[in-house]
Image (cartoon, rainbow, N blue to C red; front, side, top):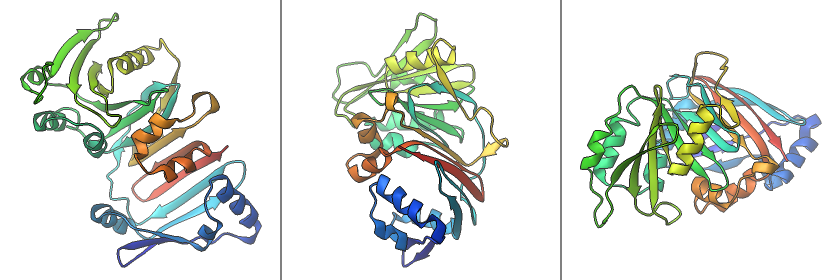
Length: 292
Protein backbone atom coordinates (compact mmCIF):
# COMPACT_ATOMS: atom_id res chain seq x y z
CA UNK A 1 0.00 0.00 0.00
CA UNK A 2 1.26 3.47 -0.93
CA UNK A 3 0.00 7.05 -0.61
CA UNK A 4 -0.18 9.89 -3.11
CA UNK A 5 -2.01 13.24 -3.06
CA UNK A 6 -4.10 12.35 0.02
CA UNK A 7 -5.18 9.09 -1.61
CA UNK A 8 -4.09 5.55 -0.92
CA UNK A 9 -3.48 2.76 -3.40
CA UNK A 10 -3.41 -0.96 -2.74
CA UNK A 11 -1.44 -3.02 -5.26
CA UNK A 12 -1.51 -6.80 -5.63
CA UNK A 13 1.34 -9.01 -6.85
CA UNK A 14 -0.44 -12.35 -7.17
CA UNK A 15 1.71 -15.28 -8.42
CA UNK A 16 0.46 -16.98 -11.57
CA UNK A 17 -0.24 -20.14 -9.55
CA UNK A 18 -2.72 -18.23 -7.35
CA UNK A 19 -4.46 -16.20 -10.06
CA UNK A 20 -7.45 -18.53 -10.36
CA UNK A 21 -7.90 -18.76 -6.58
CA UNK A 22 -7.70 -14.97 -6.28
CA UNK A 23 -10.31 -14.54 -9.02
CA UNK A 24 -12.69 -16.98 -7.30
CA UNK A 25 -12.21 -15.15 -4.01
CA UNK A 26 -13.25 -11.86 -5.62
CA UNK A 27 -16.31 -13.59 -7.08
CA UNK A 28 -17.36 -14.96 -3.71
CA UNK A 29 -17.01 -11.53 -2.12
CA UNK A 30 -18.96 -9.95 -5.00
CA UNK A 31 -16.03 -7.66 -5.79
CA UNK A 32 -15.06 -6.61 -9.34
CA UNK A 33 -12.22 -8.52 -11.01
CA UNK A 34 -10.59 -5.17 -11.79
CA UNK A 35 -9.40 -5.04 -8.17
CA UNK A 36 -6.58 -7.35 -9.25
CA UNK A 37 -5.02 -4.29 -10.89
CA UNK A 38 -5.16 -2.44 -7.55
CA UNK A 39 -7.63 0.03 -6.11
CA UNK A 40 -7.63 3.50 -4.59
CA UNK A 41 -9.49 4.99 -1.64
CA UNK A 42 -9.63 8.18 0.42
CA UNK A 43 -10.01 8.73 4.16
CA UNK A 44 -10.81 11.64 6.44
CA UNK A 45 -7.88 13.84 7.50
CA UNK A 46 -7.35 12.16 10.88
CA UNK A 47 -7.46 8.62 9.50
CA UNK A 48 -5.23 9.62 6.57
CA UNK A 49 -2.58 10.96 8.92
CA UNK A 50 -2.65 7.74 10.98
CA UNK A 51 -2.40 5.51 7.90
CA UNK A 52 0.40 7.60 6.40
CA UNK A 53 2.30 7.06 9.64
CA UNK A 54 2.04 3.28 9.16
CA UNK A 55 3.21 3.19 5.54
CA UNK A 56 4.70 1.30 3.82
CA UNK A 57 2.47 -1.73 4.47
CA UNK A 58 3.32 -5.09 2.95
CA UNK A 59 1.52 -8.41 3.31
CA UNK A 60 1.88 -11.97 2.08
CA UNK A 61 -1.41 -13.75 1.31
CA UNK A 62 -1.89 -17.50 0.87
CA UNK A 63 -5.05 -18.88 -0.72
CA UNK A 64 -6.73 -22.17 0.11
CA UNK A 65 -9.72 -23.30 2.15
CA UNK A 66 -8.69 -20.39 4.37
CA UNK A 67 -7.15 -17.10 3.28
CA UNK A 68 -4.16 -16.47 5.54
CA UNK A 69 -2.24 -13.22 5.56
CA UNK A 70 0.74 -11.85 7.44
CA UNK A 71 2.53 -8.59 6.99
CA UNK A 72 4.51 -5.68 8.34
CA UNK A 73 4.06 -1.96 8.62
CA UNK A 74 6.26 0.97 9.58
CA UNK A 75 4.38 1.45 12.84
CA UNK A 76 0.71 1.04 13.70
CA UNK A 77 0.40 4.35 15.55
CA UNK A 78 -1.41 2.42 18.30
CA UNK A 79 0.51 1.58 21.43
CA UNK A 80 0.43 -2.05 22.48
CA UNK A 81 -2.21 -2.56 25.16
CA UNK A 82 -2.49 -5.09 27.99
CA UNK A 83 -4.78 -7.88 26.78
CA UNK A 84 -8.09 -8.44 28.55
CA UNK A 85 -9.20 -12.07 28.84
CA UNK A 86 -12.97 -12.19 28.41
CA UNK A 87 -15.86 -14.60 27.85
CA UNK A 88 -18.23 -13.43 25.12
CA UNK A 89 -21.64 -14.94 24.20
CA UNK A 90 -21.62 -17.92 21.86
CA UNK A 91 -23.82 -15.97 19.41
CA UNK A 92 -21.27 -13.16 19.13
CA UNK A 93 -20.87 -11.82 15.60
CA UNK A 94 -18.11 -9.30 16.32
CA UNK A 95 -15.58 -8.82 19.10
CA UNK A 96 -12.93 -6.10 18.86
CA UNK A 97 -10.12 -5.23 21.27
CA UNK A 98 -8.93 -1.65 20.64
CA UNK A 99 -7.78 1.51 22.48
CA UNK A 100 -11.30 2.97 22.95
CA UNK A 101 -14.72 3.21 21.36
CA UNK A 102 -15.63 6.86 21.91
CA UNK A 103 -16.41 7.34 18.21
CA UNK A 104 -18.59 4.23 18.15
CA UNK A 105 -20.67 5.48 21.08
CA UNK A 106 -20.93 9.13 19.99
CA UNK A 107 -22.06 8.31 16.43
CA UNK A 108 -24.75 5.82 17.42
CA UNK A 109 -26.19 7.15 20.66
CA UNK A 110 -27.62 10.51 21.66
CA UNK A 111 -26.82 11.75 25.16
CA UNK A 112 -26.20 15.00 27.08
CA UNK A 113 -22.68 16.49 27.41
CA UNK A 114 -22.63 15.67 31.13
CA UNK A 115 -22.94 11.98 30.32
CA UNK A 116 -20.16 12.21 27.72
CA UNK A 117 -17.93 13.66 30.42
CA UNK A 118 -18.93 10.86 32.80
CA UNK A 119 -18.03 8.26 30.16
CA UNK A 120 -14.59 9.83 29.70
CA UNK A 121 -13.90 9.62 33.43
CA UNK A 122 -15.27 6.12 33.96
CA UNK A 123 -15.77 3.94 30.87
CA UNK A 124 -12.86 5.44 28.90
CA UNK A 125 -10.55 6.15 31.84
CA UNK A 126 -8.07 3.49 30.68
CA UNK A 127 -6.96 2.47 27.20
CA UNK A 128 -7.82 -1.02 26.03
CA UNK A 129 -11.49 -2.00 25.69
CA UNK A 130 -13.53 -4.75 24.05
CA UNK A 131 -16.58 -4.14 21.85
CA UNK A 132 -19.01 -7.07 21.52
CA UNK A 133 -21.98 -7.27 19.13
CA UNK A 134 -24.16 -10.33 19.61
CA UNK A 135 -27.62 -11.84 19.19
CA UNK A 136 -30.44 -11.44 16.67
CA UNK A 137 -31.14 -7.85 17.79
CA UNK A 138 -27.48 -6.80 17.51
CA UNK A 139 -27.10 -6.07 21.21
CA UNK A 140 -23.74 -4.56 22.01
CA UNK A 141 -21.47 -4.03 24.98
CA UNK A 142 -18.21 -2.26 25.71
CA UNK A 143 -16.02 -3.82 28.39
CA UNK A 144 -13.09 -2.22 30.19
CA UNK A 145 -11.08 -2.54 33.36
CA UNK A 146 -12.19 -0.11 36.07
CA UNK A 147 -11.35 -0.14 39.76
CA UNK A 148 -13.72 2.60 40.92
CA UNK A 149 -16.82 3.80 39.05
CA UNK A 150 -18.75 6.88 40.17
CA UNK A 151 -22.33 5.69 39.63
CA UNK A 152 -23.58 8.14 42.28
CA UNK A 153 -22.97 11.17 40.04
CA UNK A 154 -25.29 9.74 37.38
CA UNK A 155 -28.18 10.85 39.60
CA UNK A 156 -27.30 14.49 38.87
CA UNK A 157 -27.55 14.19 35.07
CA UNK A 158 -30.75 15.40 33.41
CA UNK A 159 -32.00 14.61 29.92
CA UNK A 160 -33.68 17.68 28.36
CA UNK A 161 -37.36 17.31 27.40
CA UNK A 162 -37.73 13.99 29.20
CA UNK A 163 -40.17 13.15 31.96
CA UNK A 164 -38.29 9.98 32.88
CA UNK A 165 -35.36 10.07 35.32
CA UNK A 166 -32.04 9.74 33.52
CA UNK A 167 -30.68 7.16 35.97
CA UNK A 168 -32.10 4.33 38.03
CA UNK A 169 -30.70 1.27 39.75
CA UNK A 170 -31.97 -2.30 39.91
CA UNK A 171 -30.63 -5.74 40.72
CA UNK A 172 -30.61 -9.15 39.04
CA UNK A 173 -31.61 -12.43 40.65
CA UNK A 174 -27.88 -13.10 41.07
CA UNK A 175 -27.62 -9.87 43.13
CA UNK A 176 -25.61 -8.01 40.49
CA UNK A 177 -26.34 -4.26 40.52
CA UNK A 178 -27.63 -2.84 37.22
CA UNK A 179 -27.23 0.89 36.57
CA UNK A 180 -29.63 2.03 33.86
CA UNK A 181 -29.47 5.31 31.93
CA UNK A 182 -32.42 6.32 29.75
CA UNK A 183 -31.20 7.64 26.41
CA UNK A 184 -33.33 9.05 23.57
CA UNK A 185 -33.50 7.66 20.03
CA UNK A 186 -30.52 5.52 19.01
CA UNK A 187 -29.38 4.41 15.54
CA UNK A 188 -32.62 2.39 15.26
CA UNK A 189 -34.79 5.36 16.17
CA UNK A 190 -35.85 3.82 19.50
CA UNK A 191 -35.18 4.90 23.11
CA UNK A 192 -32.39 2.98 24.80
CA UNK A 193 -32.07 1.82 28.41
CA UNK A 194 -28.28 1.47 28.37
CA UNK A 195 -27.07 -0.59 31.32
CA UNK A 196 -23.84 -0.67 33.32
CA UNK A 197 -22.71 -3.44 35.66
CA UNK A 198 -19.47 -4.64 37.22
CA UNK A 199 -18.03 -8.09 37.75
CA UNK A 200 -14.73 -7.94 39.58
CA UNK A 201 -12.56 -5.30 37.92
CA UNK A 202 -14.50 -5.41 34.65
CA UNK A 203 -17.01 -2.68 33.84
CA UNK A 204 -19.67 -3.50 31.22
CA UNK A 205 -21.69 -0.92 29.28
CA UNK A 206 -24.49 -2.79 27.46
CA UNK A 207 -27.26 -1.72 25.12
CA UNK A 208 -30.13 -3.01 27.28
CA UNK A 209 -30.94 -4.68 30.62
CA UNK A 210 -31.63 -7.91 28.71
CA UNK A 211 -28.20 -7.77 27.09
CA UNK A 212 -26.66 -7.12 30.51
CA UNK A 213 -28.33 -10.18 32.03
CA UNK A 214 -27.15 -12.32 29.10
CA UNK A 215 -23.58 -11.14 29.62
CA UNK A 216 -23.78 -11.77 33.36
CA UNK A 217 -24.87 -15.37 32.76
CA UNK A 218 -21.99 -15.81 30.32
CA UNK A 219 -19.45 -14.47 32.83
CA UNK A 220 -20.84 -16.81 35.49
CA UNK A 221 -20.63 -19.78 33.07
CA UNK A 222 -24.41 -20.22 33.12
CA UNK A 223 -24.59 -19.92 29.30
CA UNK A 224 -22.25 -21.11 26.52
CA UNK A 225 -19.43 -18.73 25.67
CA UNK A 226 -16.37 -18.09 23.51
CA UNK A 227 -13.00 -17.19 25.03
CA UNK A 228 -11.82 -13.95 23.44
CA UNK A 229 -8.13 -13.07 23.87
CA UNK A 230 -7.80 -15.86 26.41
CA UNK A 231 -4.41 -17.16 25.22
CA UNK A 232 -2.62 -14.34 23.39
CA UNK A 233 0.70 -15.03 21.70
CA UNK A 234 2.21 -12.35 23.93
CA UNK A 235 1.05 -10.10 26.72
CA UNK A 236 0.09 -7.12 24.56
CA UNK A 237 -1.72 -6.32 21.29
CA UNK A 238 -2.62 -3.12 19.47
CA UNK A 239 -5.84 -4.36 17.87
CA UNK A 240 -7.65 -7.70 17.70
CA UNK A 241 -10.78 -8.46 15.67
CA UNK A 242 -12.94 -11.59 15.64
CA UNK A 243 -15.82 -11.68 13.13
CA UNK A 244 -18.21 -14.64 13.13
CA UNK A 245 -21.02 -15.29 10.67
CA UNK A 246 -22.06 -18.94 11.15
CA UNK A 247 -25.30 -20.18 9.60
CA UNK A 248 -26.99 -20.64 12.98
CA UNK A 249 -26.08 -17.13 14.21
CA UNK A 250 -25.59 -15.21 10.97
CA UNK A 251 -25.39 -11.42 10.76
CA UNK A 252 -28.64 -9.65 9.96
CA UNK A 253 -30.09 -6.23 9.21
CA UNK A 254 -29.80 -4.89 12.80
CA UNK A 255 -26.10 -5.86 12.85
CA UNK A 256 -25.43 -4.28 9.46
CA UNK A 257 -27.29 -1.08 10.37
CA UNK A 258 -25.42 -0.77 13.67
CA UNK A 259 -22.01 -1.33 12.10
CA UNK A 260 -22.31 0.20 8.62
CA UNK A 261 -25.31 2.55 8.63
CA UNK A 262 -26.16 3.29 5.00
CA UNK A 263 -23.01 1.70 3.54
CA UNK A 264 -24.82 -1.37 2.27
CA UNK A 265 -22.01 -2.37 -0.11
CA UNK A 266 -19.81 -3.27 2.88
CA UNK A 267 -22.58 -5.39 4.37
CA UNK A 268 -22.96 -7.37 1.13
CA UNK A 269 -19.25 -8.20 1.16
CA UNK A 270 -18.99 -9.45 4.72
CA UNK A 271 -22.13 -11.56 4.31
CA UNK A 272 -19.92 -13.87 2.20
CA UNK A 273 -17.44 -14.37 5.07
CA UNK A 274 -18.07 -17.09 7.67
CA UNK A 275 -15.23 -16.05 10.01
CA UNK A 276 -12.35 -13.60 10.04
CA UNK A 277 -9.60 -12.77 12.51
CA UNK A 278 -7.02 -10.01 12.64
CA UNK A 279 -4.28 -9.31 15.16
CA UNK A 280 -2.23 -6.11 14.96
CA UNK A 281 0.89 -5.46 16.98
CA UNK A 282 3.08 -2.38 16.82
CA UNK A 283 4.73 -3.20 13.48
CA UNK A 284 3.23 -6.50 12.30
CA UNK A 285 -0.17 -8.02 11.65
CA UNK A 286 -1.67 -11.40 10.79
CA UNK A 287 -5.06 -12.98 10.25
CA UNK A 288 -7.29 -15.31 8.32
CA UNK A 289 -10.57 -15.21 6.42
CA UNK A 290 -12.94 -18.13 5.86
CA UNK A 291 -15.37 -17.68 2.98
CA UNK A 292 -18.81 -19.26 2.74
